[in-house]
Image 1 (cartoon, helix red, strand yellow):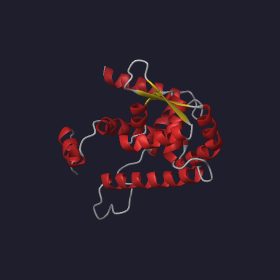
Image 2: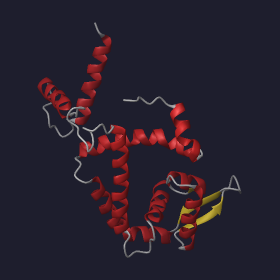
Image 3: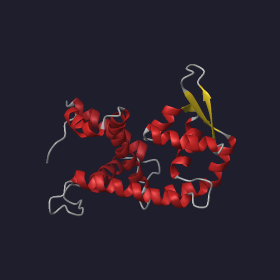
Image 4: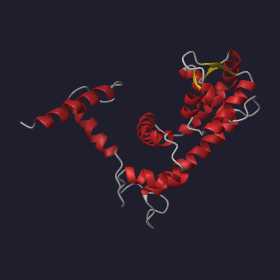
Amino acid sequence: MNYNLAKDVIQLLQQFDSENTNSQYPPDIEGFKSWVFHQQKDKPSRKNITWEGKESGRSPESIISTLLVHMNRYAKTYSKSAIAGSEFSTQEEFIYLINLKSFGEMSKTELIKKNIQDKPVGNLIITRLIKNGWVKQADSKTDKRTKIIAITQKGLDALEKQMANIRNATKIVSGNLTEDEKYELIELLNKLDHFHNPIFGRNIESANLIDTVFKENSFNDN
């Protein structure tokens, strides 16, 4: 008996059971077979995915990089609209406040790293937030050299005034993706984030960054 195959089938059944919560498929063997069929049918293949420049040899890595840049610019445009006419000067200000509201007080360094920014830029943003009275700064109880940043009630109030617009902006950024596509995208973006975040945290000099990352990782040249 092929025990590995049996294990794979059991895992597939568990996935079917967890994903079929709305009873889209009958909870029997026929429903399971239909689910497996559509899982394979809906999965894109290399042949039917196209992009600008593919026929002339443009690589998938190139289009991925370009599309991520485009999405960042689209998101910034909607974020700018979300804070138009408010007390916020930049989208980074409300993103810092959202992180403090969601995760609680943290050190200045932790807050800057969570927003994937360089220390000088992050310090300027925090300084503006302190000046506006939206966050407060205090010495760490365990290390006097460390500054702890916490959101104030004034900061919560400023954030709440814009939350409706901010939520609408995030919905627009998700565009016309289905719920399943959103979760698939989250999984892929999380995988990329888990790859890049530790590299970013090392603060490798720009002149050495690409060579260092290439030497440490295996990239297939197609």
